[in-house]
Amino acid sequence: MEAIRINKLNKTFKNGKKAISNFNLTVPQGEIFSLLGPNGAGKSTLINILTTYILPTSGEITIMGYDLRNESQRIRNCISCVAQHTSIDKHMSLKENLEFQGRLFGLDSSTIYARSEELIQTFHLAKYCDYKVSEYSGGVTRRLDIAMSLISHPKVLFLDEPTVGMDIESRQILWQMIRTIQEKFNTTIFLTTHYLEEAQLLSNTICIMKEGQPLIQGSLTELRQYFNEPVIRVELTSDENPATLLEHLNTHSYIKNIRIEENSLYITVEDRTRDFARTNTILNENYIDFCAVEIQKPSLSDIFMKFTNEEEVE
Ligand SMILES: Nc1ncnc2c1ncn2[C@@H]1O[C@H](COP(=O)(O)OP(=O)(O)OP(=O)(O)O)[C@@H](O)[C@H]1O
Image (cartoon, rainbow, N blue to C red; front, top):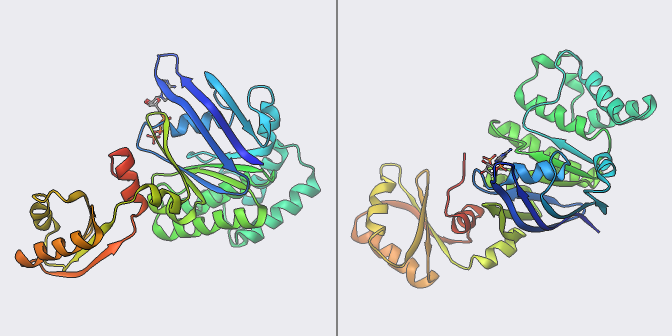
């Protein structure tokens, strides 16, 4: 069974703004699903509808087989949502927060105790039990927030930009936590993110949306098949300026797109063998010092840029 099925969804706000337009989507049970899109694409609007926070204008949605219009309370009982603002009470301890959340879902004391212990153990939170929640770092607070959202054993967990603003170490811990939730609890995870690397690392399925509509949906391998264009990566030595090479490359029509990341240029081309040779010639003719030139599979960034005509939002 699909965890989420969306059919011909539309959302127009009172001011006439059409935020979601004829949107179809399915999310299989047990998957990590990532929703990507530039600012204003409609990601938050979609999450707000799926979590029953706002009503759609038209269209059908089922979550775990329940109809969103007629069975919204049943849906609320089987989902959890971790929004960007924390729902933790900083005056309470970690265990008190978990207990409070359990009570909101109407769980009895022994269930709350057993589930709290399980969550603390699974997500290695025991060492934080002795500290006040107000003393936690942003990363630990977010981990507690997600642990709290699991006390009701939701079938579908919505995570709205779960790692926004975190340093790389905290992000990696959280990515592991998300994988554990999928493996141990078999929870379907629906996440929105601006970090393409995050979607690439975590997701079974990715949907890129823009202006209220899905542009493409599939696994990374499927997305790569749609995007059938090779990418050549040129890594320059540290004393070379990527802008100089960009200037030379821009005069050649075989190049479809160029993305610069640190000292590397990712060049989308038409023909892998012919254009690999051409790129090498340009490097040599212009005496540009490089450490590596290689043909790569397109990354999610390349696919995102092709479909949205926009760069990753940081
Ligand atoms: N309550 C509202 N009333 C009117 N327009 C709205 C409302 N909420 C959102 N919008 C508009 O709907 C469009 C989609 O907004 P939404 O917040 O869903 O995008 P998003 O993809 O989540 O963007 P971001 O990544 O910047 O959070 C935008 O043009 C936004 O201005």
